[in-house]
Image 1: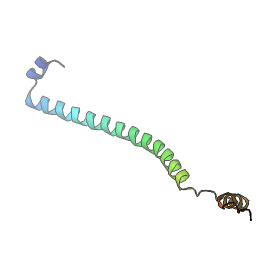
Image 2: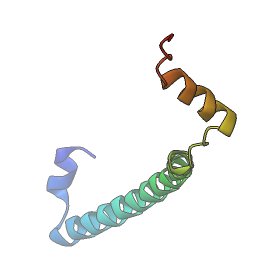
Image 3: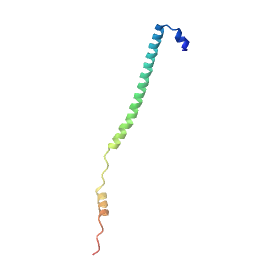
Image 4: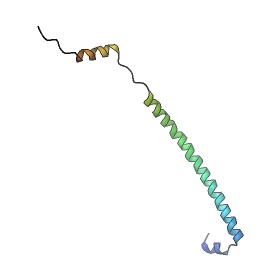
Amino acid sequence: MAKNDLDSLSIEELAALRENATDKLLEKVSARRAELEAELEKLAQYDRLAKKSQAAPVAKAKKSDEKNSDEAKEPIAKAA
């Protein structure tokens, strides 16, 4: 709508136009918000998976592995 068209409108018509524009804007904002919230929910699933994998316990070494690592740390006995 051109500026000249707005100049020709009465106060009542301008007020109605403003109300219609506000209603349409709220409608579009609500629709976009719903889209973004749905996208955030999808992304949150990946965040939950990442947090679960970080919280997973670390596997302990087997007894045979621990024994081998202890032997490597012990000093070699001196020849008598």
